[in-house]
Image (cartoon, rainbow, N blue to C red; front, side, top):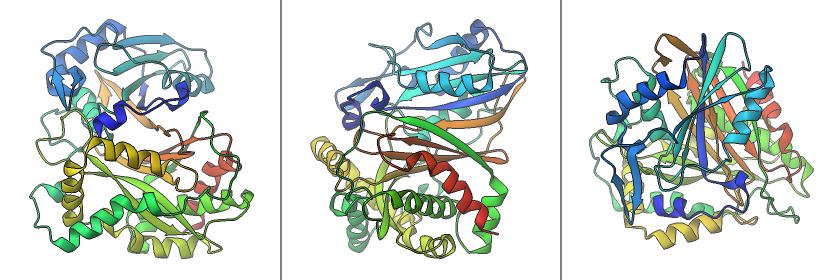
Length: 398
């Protein structure tokens, strides 16, 4: 997976495989020197920040010059300037001949706060790696267990042949299934536009509890409904909405490892003419593969046995218009974050939409807020309304 991501083609800066997170902090902005000193102090806890690709493995350097990695930008005094700066920076090149990450101090957009943008090449870290990095750098009690690991696979479960077949179906399904945009003849562009929206976490939890579902089920059902609404501008609306969902395979002891411990599972949520309530009722049945410890372990084994060339071919297959699905990820930051007394009040993720994937979405829960980042291909009709459709679907559930 790492080598396939490292060699992912980018036809424009917007399709570079960069992901990130914005920490919105209260208080006066610190000096760049303070931030660099803080990062250096905690650097031993995050070996990924010192890692460089070395063939099939990662080489962890003994030390690191932080000057190209911890940087500063003053931005215009307007709230919208922060989103503009993040959109500009996420597509900028990362340091060459050095670990592919940067931490940006952003300030000037507000009088009583600042922001920290952490961005990284996706081959160096997956979502779990990013979560571990944020907790190692900015959480109190850094010795606490990382939220990046999956407790459900802390002990390796027994895997049957049936589990392997089911996991292989989830792994390969996206290469066979018709995509949401198969009926749109114009194809995709290399441009991307990020959009964000927020909802209270408690609302998602209440909806999930009332229906015997998970927060992730609610998120995906609302996203399927939003995509179905947007697809009304296509020649034909899909009968089902396919998703590619990154499944976290990290075990205890792997939370700080560089690279990716994920596999993309293919699932399908009903589309067609059904309403949001009907879609939500059917979604838990579609997401069972994401919740099973045995199937996660089976996916882990399949991924370990799959050659890089096959991974790359699969990525190309699922990014063709005939098969393209929505990339839908979710992350949780249960621990409070801060920087030397400056509290992190909100956390906004920044998602990557690969070439050939016109919609990539990530939900991140932190404190009492769920923030969703939609990275969209502006060439596709109706996608600019996707955040509004998603929020409307969530609001419709009592």
